Length: 535
Image (cartoon, rainbow, N blue to C red):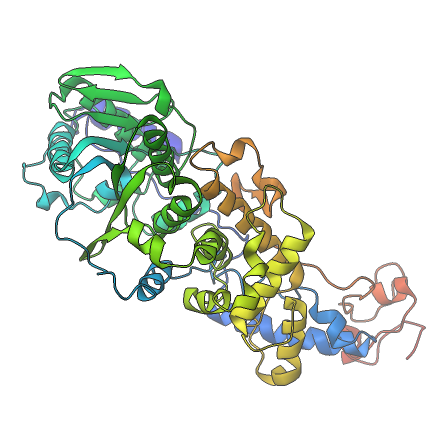
């Protein structure tokens, strides 16, 4: 297929010149691999539940109690944690911000209509660009040169009340826990891959297809930074937070800015890094505004203000949130001073444990907030942010997640919750909704710790230099770092034999194990079973 595409390129663009060599090349769609090796539909999951119930009956027949069987993930996957396509189940992240704001009734959730004067205005570049329809840009956009000019006009206008503007970019690494989520977001689009971009390159009509490709986003960011270094002649200072080298651009001059060099992958984390840099190099009260609609930023900014920035002269911290048609300017300083500090310190752990881009949904954000606001539950997450994840911290986090799912229960583990569900409603058991095993929830807790450390360490360093995802509940599969899910069966429990006669001693697992075949074995469908051991 690749050879044919190359031949077509040469024929149409180089020989016959029917198509301009600069025209966009659409990526040929190949079937892509997901987190699991087999996609599961809703029907598949129901079938899995039926098979699991039959397996429990078989295990009981072999002398294994249901309690021993249920502490194993006896379906093909942990459907409590992953969706029908094998991706981690998605939480409604925005619910966390919504519910936190409800705890601050005296604060206007919309805030002022325009940004107030501020020292620095920090923008998540790709988050902004992805939401801009071409038709809404003031300048007519045909080429990427036009696009860059229109974006710059928009950025400078947005930061008009600031002394400086900081444009923060993402880094798209091959070795990233975010790549599975990026695959999910881009799977519905006809991906357009642009390895490089020139000023006269025409902008594709469907920009969302460009943003579906990490290579295209990397190329566009590199192009835009070079465009600014060459073409930006405004007096408003621009700091460009991009890897591997940050830049300062103003009045037609561009120079490297080593103080902002960092290897953070996510623009969310780089924004936190920029705030830390400003506070460490400013004297006196400082006001900073950030533009981002991501709940991750909302959570992290609250946390770092309470833990790291409150005493560094940060007088005002504003967050401009753009979510669909809604726009709000939130006074994070006032919100931090309104919420209980112990609650704020738990937010990164709570957010990661109950579901974000890299972890599975476990209960709702509201249920988690209700649980953590009960004083006796606060210690369950109090030490989750410790420099080293301990067995005790994992145990307490599991208890917290049980409380999120079943607030009034005396149970403490997911295994107990799973067995309790089976005992109370075995005939209507749904393994898509039934709690996963403690083994898998503890893997989830490790993943959540890893993600929360990315957020917590963001002002100072990139956590991947200290922690390896492989050691915290992730594994490598099909060139992706994916959540690890443990699927196993009780030791010593044989699979029912699949032989019609069992006449070959070394083939029938029952004969090999020295036990009789049973009514669940295929051979028992007839009178031809040759296993000499009888029940």
